[in-house]
Length: 449
Image (cartoon, helix red, strand yellow):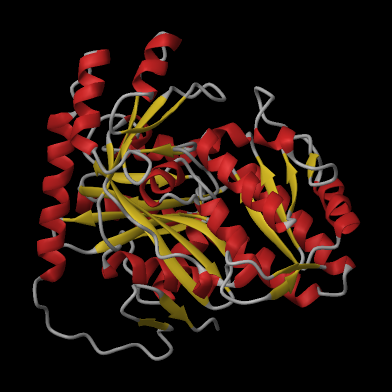
């Protein structure tokens, strides 16, 4: 066992924790990965990780035995065997994409069974299964009275599902057809005509699909961290309108300063608690003209949005998840939540230009090309001294890319949403066992049932 009594933690705890990082650590950004590795070294937390690509980083300075490379194509049984060698009380999951989340969830379940904790392991695996599945997530939202887009899910070949889809198309003019286990837009289409709808459903054969009304509105991400009935909303980001062209990954994304609005934080944390999920999660919402925040999906993992909150808060969600495993959510520092901006950059920018940009005032980080993704610039936040506007001017000066208009549009969206959510409304009767209560700090205690 590893005992901690330094001033990093608010109480002395005896625990064993393993960080399981699956997926190239370089995707987290170098500062976020470095901070996590340094914390693990200080606290004696072992790291099982996909080998970083390119190699060479903070993990090279770890003492022997603290860092174990795990091939990305390792099986769930092989990962479970590595966990069994270490015998941790708690596994901190840090994986992306979803395929690796599923593998690690299965590995943790097998490890739990081997330790005689079958019921606990099954509950944890079921939480991953629910939140990784868009249809089951919809069902859980319905049980919790959390808004989702009008829709249904079931086998694409089912006559009743097809009739329901046709009615949705007639009522809304556009629908989304989604693979319930797809990620990053995979298996998703946006039919506008009956023929397009029929063709989209045919592509899925007899497999399940989710069919939802297309909701014109603002796309928003919220990142939360939950453990042992406690939850903390780390930040929220406005990603543009559903009518905008291109994937949100390629648009300017703004994480506003200040706490996460209650209509987002409460729904995100209640959903995770009801699923029995513990760990890092990203909730995706669309907010329509009516001000209702509808859940689109939940990613029970780190995601591309994690980087913007790491820059904005000064602590990455991975680092905070390790701290929560060691000392509990109540011992975590309150997130700084300073205004932060994230934007993709052209892949053809010269390395020396990216280096100049990384050193520019107000720029938090420049994330290089990783796993085929474009480089990104993160501006403002704790890491950029809160100097968002200055960083935007630096980007324009060095690259010719003017982001100010898009930034002001995002800021206007934030002001509009804040005004809508702060408008007095008739009180809605509380649901029994809603499981959420808010304190002055913005932390939420969750009753998991």
